[in-house]
Length: 521
Image (cartoon, rainbow, N blue to C red; front, side, top):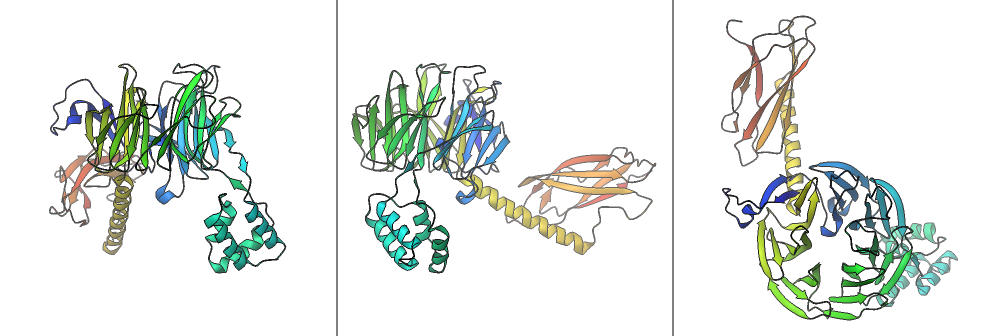
């Protein structure tokens, strides 16, 4: 994860990139181990203390172990597991009462989990859908032992290919099993009722009755059932339900629910549908020639990213205003808004590692990152008003590779220490000294911390030197030895230095630490 803050001053840094005069590198963490996308990032003052935190719906490595992470600065403040993969995150005010602390909503599976002060507050579940009648009849026959598991498999596969009503999760799980596992699954589940549950695909917020920044907001949900739901911010009842010809994947809204609003939904069928208040179905349709990869509303212009590496600007009535071609595939998009300047711009994260910022079709800035950009978020973080947070695809790969290499080096060093009979505790009473080392970092520069302890009962140790014996071809240290202060019995003394690995092939060797008495002592 990388974070940068905008600056009005002109920079003269060594790397002469266009972004260097506009952004200050605030933090870079290749070990963040975050797997997410832009819809699952939100910045909010979750405790009402003026300190804005970053909430992340994390997919987990390889889509496993999804969780909600809340970061304060560079550290993870809280983490809680999720039962399903997150689809979107949003911060919103539920009421007008004090203190005006926003709640955090996280859409995951068929549910929206609402947190207040980082504690679970409410869970909204999508209403269940009626099951496919043919599917229901087949499971009833299996319950009465009228058909075996092989017949059930064959019939369910035929329904899945032709029926308009999708199969339930139970049937889909059954069809994924091996033949040897199917009979046991049928015996276990044939008496259970068939349930078909919709899944949330996207989520955003819509102001309830006022346009103020701290006004109440409704949650707007897009579902796999091709519906849009507007939820009441206090009772979490469904205020409005709208139908779409396709499954929504990106949402943008403007206006207030009680007054007038426009809602734009980019769908999997390659179209963007525009809806207004009191409309049960779309009023306008924007037909795209390819699939959308992002949707951002900036200054009443709908900016759409497509799989043809283009940004398109449209009006709410579907008129195309402009098109800009990107130098690489668009992976993610988000809004950059500076309220103090009245600026709204579109950020596009590209596969070549660039973050391009556009005001309409004018290119404002290009930021270059180490790898393909997977998510973008701009806003207040901590107490800094204009912070850009970027995650890249390489972070997890780099983290895993370096972690495996670090474990391998540690294991090899441990084996060598056992074979060489290296002992961190002095074996003689003349030098009652205990020493152990801690290595931090993933390279090529490591932090080496030596912990020295005088193990005698009453005698202090004075005039001690610590020497490092190492292969100068593989390692470089600032100093080969340094003096140790007076060691009082029983206390732990940490001594720090840095080690630079000079090998680019992962070759490692032992660094010996040798305590010695200074001359004349």
